[in-house]
Length: 199
Image (cartoon, rainbow, N blue to C red; front, side):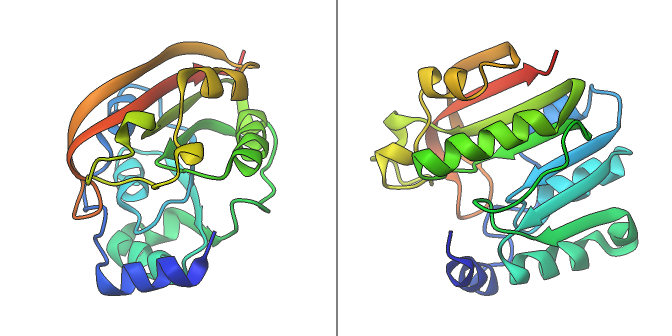
């Protein structure tokens, strides 16, 4: 929740999380009918740019103005179709029932903030809309492949099921991966993956 921390991070390494889309998000963006996609905490725009090229209308936001600038530059001719805003995850207001899909890719927050934000995200989905989430789980704590070093900010199955209890859970499980998403996410990792639907 520190804009200047992230501004400095993206000044030093614009592609800190790589230039390719997250694999879990890509898997679902590729098979879902294109619609309106929300990408909170989008950073340098790797997921947004991929989704735009698949025909999605993308609204993204992040607290880092430097990350947004990189994303708009990378979007090039697609920039006019990218609605990228500067917002704080703890304070953002989301339009209810507006999105066909939401991608939460490594959005780790303190528990009270996480719970409130996840409720906003669930409410932002249209009926039939899909929530696609990937984040680190507690076994990631000693790993060097990314993620917060505060266990309270990592995801457990029970926490995520409770946060999204109003949605239909289509997939919720842990996975062990070899990440290759730039210097920020590289190497063996323990993650949690969710696919859920608003009914």
